[in-house]
View 1 (cartoon, rainbow, N blue to C red):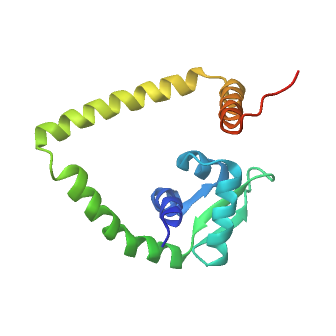
View 2 (view 1 turned 90 degrees about the vertical axis):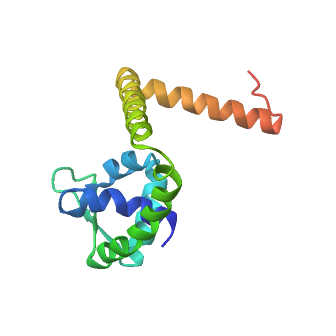
Length: 145
């Protein structure tokens, strides 16, 4: 199973009925619409997930785990969890884990607050401008006005 397959199946396995709207899945993964759609299409072709029309929104779709997908994530999860636990949690004492939890929760709250305060169009515009500027620096191409 690829890392992308695993990434898609984790939020689906944790969702009610093993299903999420495609849009919500992309948000959970931090992926754009195109990447989410292409990955889901590959997984549909392999029988790991199904994609169905959304009853609430004719423009949207819902992605769900198949039995084969559920079996695949259940088989892969222990192999993923063990090294994460060994590398990131086992070396820490209980007090250090508690402190880490407090720090991460504080950071997550700050991220959520920042995201809630940003108008979506402004965030996208700034990100696009930043990406264009990086591309110009790499290629040496400047926009002529």
